[in-house]
Length: 152
Image (cartoon, rainbow, N blue to C red; front, side, top):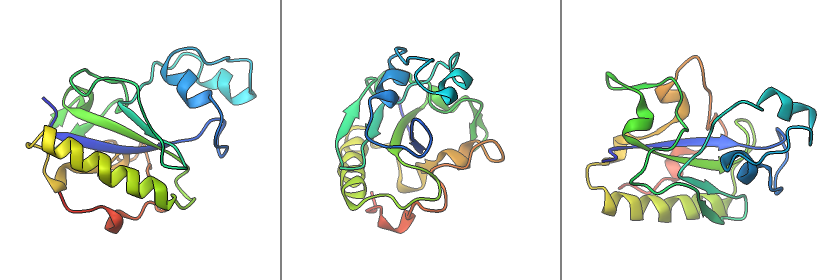
C-alpha cells in the first residue's frame, strides 16, 4: 500500500522534449544507438507509475498497486527502498527549466485522485526524488515550484 509520492523529472535525450524516448526507456525498448547518451543508460531498469508530458498529458506505465523502479537507493523517514511503498510521478523536464502550467494542472489532478485512493498519503508525504536520495539525486530541481501544489 502506497503512502508516499515521489516527484521526479526526466528528459531524453537530456534537455529535449516531446519524443518517444521516455516511453521507450520505461518499456525497455529504447534504441541504445539512437543517441550517444543512450549508451550510458543502456542497462538501466527504470519505470515510473506516471509520466506527465509538457502539454499536461498523463501516461501511466505501472499500476499504482504494483512496484515501479523509480526511486533507486532511497530512504524516507527511516524506511529504506522507497520503491516498495511509493508512487513515482515523472515530469517531462529538467531541474533548471520551468515546468509548464499544464503540467502543474495535471499533477494536481493526479495528486487529488491518488490521495483519495490512498488516504495514508498526507501532504507532507509528497516529496521530490532529492528528498529520498539526497546527494545522489536533485530532481525535480530548483525549477519546481512546490507552492503550486494544491494541499491534499
